[in-house]
Length: 354
Length: 285
Image 1 (cartoon, rainbow over the protein chains, first blue to last red):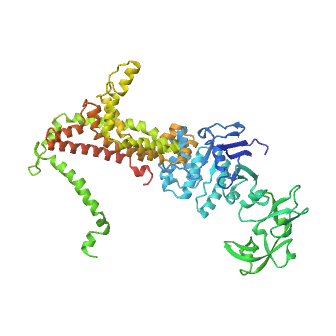
Image 2: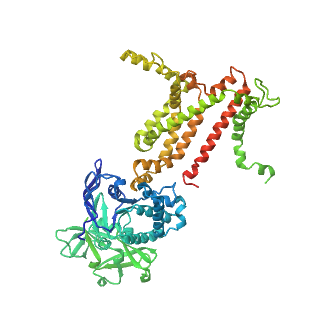
Image 3: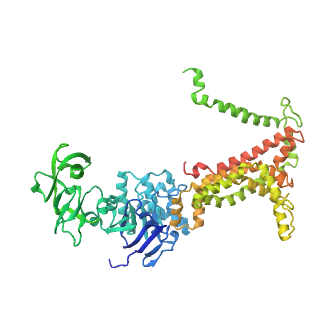
């Protein structure tokens, strides 16, 4: 990672009135990287993307493309291209005309345009006969591919994606996620993707940046984000987790006021007094006796859901509900209302700050 | 099911009142006009041998000049309105934001005042020693010729009167263009002009075409503007028709002129609708 980053953001800020939609972001993105920005709606990720594409302009800070400041360059002058959430295909044009649009704007000869368009269609597994088909008659998945082909035809240095898969049903989405990853590898281009689904980000990305209220709260590989979230927000963003507000109580022990108990935890960082103990559902297990795990809680089996290959159990402890997940073949024999003991080891838990 | 019920399914029965109303109020007068155009000149009875004399008379007279004036003025009105209204429509749909409602209201308000009253208002404005020339004279001592009673002012009056009929369909058309589609074109390297040509214009076309047709059909039938503002400097076809039905008491000739006008306008409308298939523009077919 000694090469110059393709894209550098320096103190990037966008304010709308008093609201800082994007707040002082610093970020380097390497050439060829698949970088995903994840955040809930209103976290500023769309505003950030619009600044990167040149459809909004920063209030302050800098955007550097290969070391050159591009802050004030409008979208049509930037060597970047975006796949929109709505795809924004041209409904009055055929598949071929859509893909060729940018080449036509540049004044490239029709036969060259057509040759390139057909190459891209082949690369994206669009039937050659679709060249003259109206885009509005294509299926959802086909339209995604047309939008991607249209963006690739621009030969951008960076490709942006604004949640293009969010409106697609689960099965097709999974297929397209893998296809997109393949295209990324084949083209070697830099992809910057935004989504509100960390699950989607995990599948495709080399690195993930999590945004909250205009700030980038954590940047790391999918593995880092998953196994070492730094804050409660990031840990909860991944999906169902068990989070317990705790106070430090020794070197590797915490105390929960809510459960009136002490638990073994990973080593507590210097100076941390309040925090949250996070235990993922798959790290929790049903045990027979308290000595089977470093930490244990007694509760009542409250509900059971089958999630395909996994089964999720809800265990009530006082007013709290803990979630336990197991692979289906390791299923747990228990009836609703049974008293159960759940446990985990300190290494399987994560200590995070607010 | 009885034969009666089969002949008149519920839908047809429900439509009956409207159907009767349209037959009496729309089809019957139209048929009467068409029929009158075939009776001998200066007669008032439909029950006599039919003839083509009226049409022969029109083609042998100089009526084609009034036809051309009407069509020409209407075409000019449509072109001028298109140029004026597109920027306003774009503003209403994209730029003005919450002011759009107020501005729309300002454009609608004149419609609540009778067309004749508004036209006479223009007279007071343009007449010698009127609002415009009177003010210029008293303030600067300039004595200018009045623009009244010219073809130009006739055109101005038509542009003014038919503006809402172009503006509102056009605004609808422009607001139908998805913002993201425009941005996508821009992002793909299109200049502002290219975005306009490749995305804005084709996608707003249904609204624009409806505006064109509406204003053209109305403007071909315009009469007050040339009579009052134009001072009869030119005679539009509508004026000829009016004269035939009133002073000249030659209903058959007036009817024949009306039928010809309807044919010409109808043919033009069909031609445009065929050239710009609204459904295919929208990608629905």
